[in-house]
Length: 485
Image (cartoon, rainbow, N blue to C red; front, top):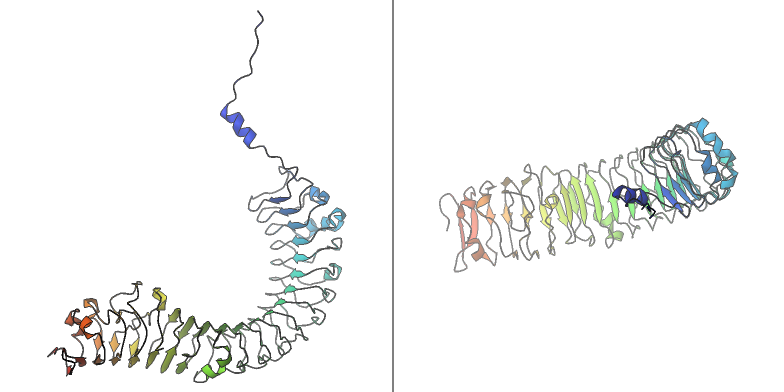
């Protein structure tokens, strides 16, 4: 009988080897991001590929096989080591005539590569290189819709006026001094020119543009924006602008950032009925008595106001029905907020008078939103009369110097405290608050005085005088150190 040799049993290692075998012949997208590849010798590149992402590798040359990927539409070499010599071969990749997106961001290029073969190119990104000139951009297809050349050494806007289809132009962090050759960009929607050396705005009537960034330039005036009637977001921070002007026609504006300028007042925004975010911080605004009038047109939409680092003395925001975020850091005489406020960032060193809107119905529990959050504050008068806070706010990390259960007042020294018709079930103090110093406490009109009887009167120890109703409804005036009434 002849011996028959049986195949050896299948081992786990064989199964693992089979599991590692992939059929890439029909793959359309290959993402090799952060593989730390020095070359693509070990990588299969199927002809079916339409997207190839080689971001964050160590490539210093181009694999010639890429030139044969006739279906390729998106190609990214972002964050590699490709220099001018290595990229030259791309000018002969005629098989990639259908390429729509080419990303060469964050490499070692010093000039714009020749991409004239890509007649259908829509997105071209050469940001974060060392390019000194836009020379060569004239060869880029006029089909281009997005051009990114930020963080380079470009000194002049040139050879781009044929890009009539352009929707996004990013030239931030360069060495530009003049805004020029923009007149043909009739379809431009976003223009990013921050961190340059531009001294004047010249937008040549870009009526359809929606976003403009000119922050960190050398502007001294806003003149030049009047015809940008579709504008929704405008960023002009960190310039030398001393007057708000040329904004009245921008009826679609939602975000206005004029922080870190030389503004002394708020003007020309009455017609901005759709304004949601207003950045005024780090200016020289001495008085905001007219700020409510200035934003009167946007009182239904305005949700965020930044006012830190201004020498303001007066604030009235009670009519801003949608205001949710308010940031400030300055001296105040009067401060009135709306019931819709959800976030208050406070670094105030002195409150002379604080008024919470009478319709306030809710306070969040975030530590950042308490009034205020720093022990250095000093209050002279705080009015919470007729507010609608239904119950004590949840604990939020604020400790023993919170004065009210609703956590809307904190102080180490309180010169006068007056409460009228506060609707909180638990009203004022507990035994943890004896560190506060009250010169006068008036709760004579509170309807829920009995709730206060549950608290340790040690909380009132430092109060020089207080006014409370007795059980019969009469007012008792005294000092906590000698009588508690």
